[in-house]
Image (cartoon, rainbow, N blue to C red; front, top):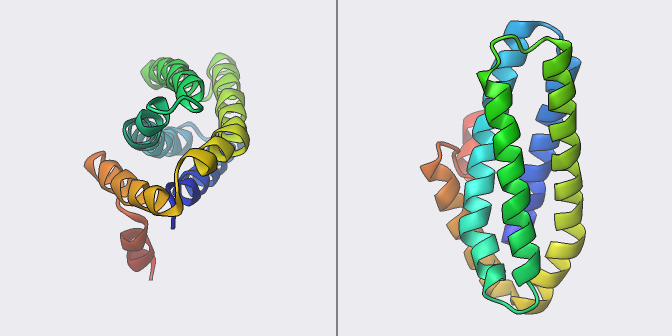
Length: 156
């Protein structure tokens, strides 16, 4: 498994959480789901920045994409912070802000999976991408998100 596989799996998980949050109208449940989303998104973003973006940044081909990724993460971080501060997660304003963040995240993931991943496949070999996957999982664990193997074992 490579870091690209892990990033894609994370993107799918986050997209599913985003949709579930919007489909949930009950404030308490929405708040709980948002908390889960915030944990997942923060662990993903910090780990991706440290492992994937830092490696991309060191390459001529990937430098601009990495910088753009960092900036997009900063914007999402601000929106998450704004949304987290709101006690009422079932208002029209909160929902509108959440939808804007959702669209930004979905666009970011789509762009990453098409453009960033193509560049990564050109500049890194399979072994490097596999090593990055291991480092990515270790970083996520530091943010309270268990590695995929442990998640699978816990589910069984």
